[in-house]
Image (tube, rainbow, N blue to C red; front, top):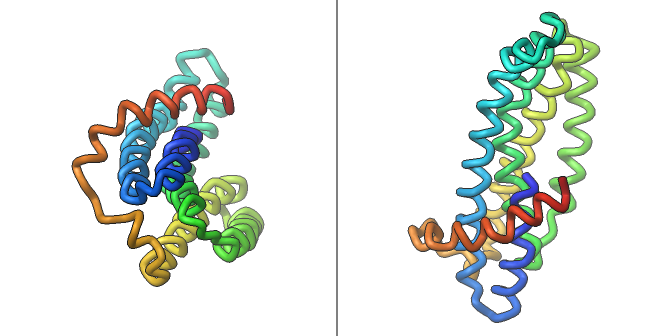
Amino acid sequence: IVLSGALETLCGQGFGAKKYKMLGIYLQASRIITLIFAIVVFVQWWCSDVILALLHQDHEFAKSVGLYLKYLIPGLFADGLLQNILSFYKHNMLLCHLSYAHSFHLRYTLAYALVHRTSLAYMGAPLAASISLWLSLLMLVLYIFNAKKIEKTWEGFTSESLSHVYSNLKLALPSAAMVW
């Protein structure tokens, strides 16, 4: 998720230099990086119960943590894409306060309902996070397609973004390390 930090630098430079097409290319490169790292985290989370058992953690604890993380996995992919798009949007001078407000309200309402009103109990919290992240992403994408304000910066998917993955990664890793 913090790997989208390179977009701050690259999109700022692209926008300032009036190379608007590059913003879309940087977004795609950042998304490729985020997806690769999300897959790595996915594997770790999916196997977390086994990993914790190998580290001699209590069996019930390992099982509970593993299940909790499995409910968070769908949100991992949504959050990665959401953070990339939000950074891209910011550099297009577009703000989406409405999606923040809706997702904040939705997440806590959904979490309360799933934790306290269903048999999921505490497992409702990661499920609520995953659902609300996907709904936030959906709201943002719907806004993108209806707003028609990114024509200068988004020309569609292109293989040119692959040539920018390494330069994006050189900025993303130090950025992630500073946050971590």
